[in-house]
Length: 85
Length: 230
Image 1 (cartoon, each protein chain N blue to C red):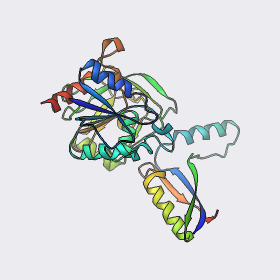
Image 2 (cartoon, rainbow over the protein chains, first blue to last red; image 1 turned 135 degrees about the vertical axis):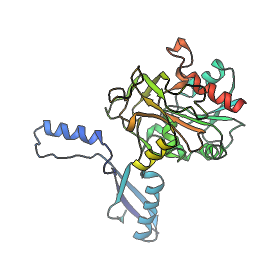
Image 3 (cartoon, rainbow over the protein chains, first blue to last red; image 1 turned 180 degrees about the horizontal axis):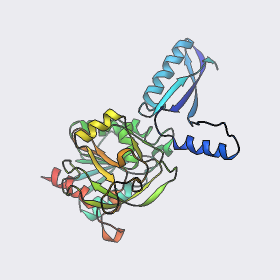
Image 4 (cartoon, each protein chain N blue to C red; image 1 turned 120 degrees about the horizontal axis):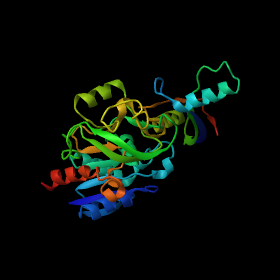
């Protein structure tokens, strides 16, 4: 068994109204960042998990995302590069 | 009739619900601890408002895995009445008892005030004693009450008469301004397929006596009493 660190990004599903992102975009524009088109605020989670292989670690975290970490009605998730912790 | 009121760590409207049931209606009420597996013979389960598990991750996301929720889900599957109020509505959605989800209010502000709601359906366990189209004054107090669901789910809910309450003006009109939190189609409450699980963001248990500013929430309790007591 190896301990792997699995980073997960959770973002509001496309098409879902994201007032937090809109408010942050407005604040950035008022600071003079004129090029800001769109902002979305999500969540970043790292899970340290014991598994035999990187693939097993990723599969396990995918299962966690589907059961608890993300709500498929409103959120999408993306698992980033898995590394030894 | 016996009401079971679930207490999660962070629930804060369990006392309000208890008092509404026991003091206003003189019915038996018991608290159900989230770690228990026993509904103690409750005929009706109330998932109360509050901030279960500190709203960590998403409101209701962690509470749905509490041991007691397995029993609540089984009770609902048997057709047993379940009333999810505010955080209870969020928990019911996370648990799959109701479709859709509740997001941060469009205003990004916590909203705590009286709202006016229009009764859209009386063919449910919790609204049979109201008249369709009636306008109710019931308080809301939430930061994450913006109901959302995909187009297909909304179509089903509308088609089957499962949208129970919509935010409205005091005259009963549905306008963007009367929408308390930006919910899709001004939805304030929905029921399950069988009509026995009601989720609503407003707090009927805080509107059961004129002393509280309104008694318009009484119908929710009177309806379930008429249904289950019969």
